[in-house]
Amino acid sequence: MLTPEDTLRLNVLISTCVAIRIDVYKLVVVGLTKDKKERTITLSPTVDSSKYIQAVQKLLVSQVLGSMGGYPSYLKRWSRMGQVGSANLKSLLKIGNIEAVVAVSNSQNLNDEVLDLVWWCATNTDQQAEIGRFLLTRDFVIKHPIGKQIADYLLEFLPFTDDTTQLIDTTNLLLQDDLISPQAKDKLWKQGQRKTAFLVGFIERMQGNLPNNNNTIVLDKNSKELECINTEQGQILLKTITHILKKINQEHILYRTLEVLGSYLSHPMIRPLPDIEQCKNQAQIVAKQLGLEDEKIKARLLLASVSEQLVVSTISAHSLAGSAIRKKLTNVLTPIQEALQALTAQ
Image 1 (cartoon, rainbow, N blue to C red):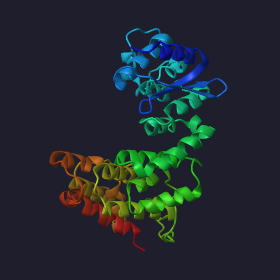
Image 2: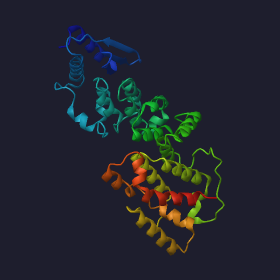
Image 3: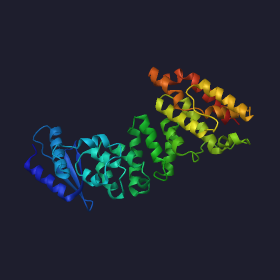
Image 4: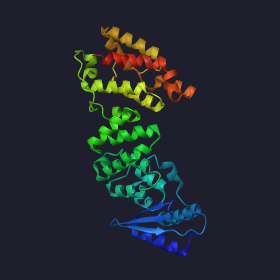
């Protein structure tokens, strides 16, 4: 199916390049040499372009991996499980299949030696953002110059991301160390006042270092049970969560916000419970056991028991979305919001 000319040029590319990617839209194959120079082949399809691309990939796989059956099926299962051996990493970056690049990016054996090749292979592909997120979960990538390149791309890509979980995850990853500038972080924080998925990324990643744009101050309360609440950062966190909960219209924002809240206020005598009335009763009992009947302490103990299990079954059972989440979960959200109000009152 491949023309003799394309077959010859592809074989030359395989022998001279350390990484290969295919642009399925422009019908070109690009190779990267050891000295970081790009070599481009413009394909000349003799049949349907998608079938021709498949033929190109089959040739690359058979020549690089010695597999005549096309793309190895096991990689489709393992590509997001981190189970690709180190011996295969470089070879997988020469077969022109983006799923192989995903496999390498998620491999536990990924190292500095192939990192730049992975990111080069991901460039201008539909999976570039996904691969970037995989890479930024690695400590060594964050410290590597490539880390900032990935962060710059993901930051630029954010406005085109619709998936809420991806918005949260991307924001969370971008806030690591100094991947993005303080100005970029400040802009994200301000955008989060409207698009609260960004704020969830902040409260997950930057507890203890959240921006103080509203002159939040320390509360003058001397209580061991309220130490984590009465600090400046504790107050910013709780006020941010209050803001998020007022605007809830997406389930994953709610799940992850409740997880942050319960985790931050966790207490050795409190356990997460699936029912808000059980949470209230537990808070009352523990407060009595501690001999502390202060309403703020009861509020803290209540919030220590919250988690996504309070709401997930209701949302799933009724397929809730948008403002219907707030309406259907009023009985759960109101006590939580009242407790937050009590803990942030002067």
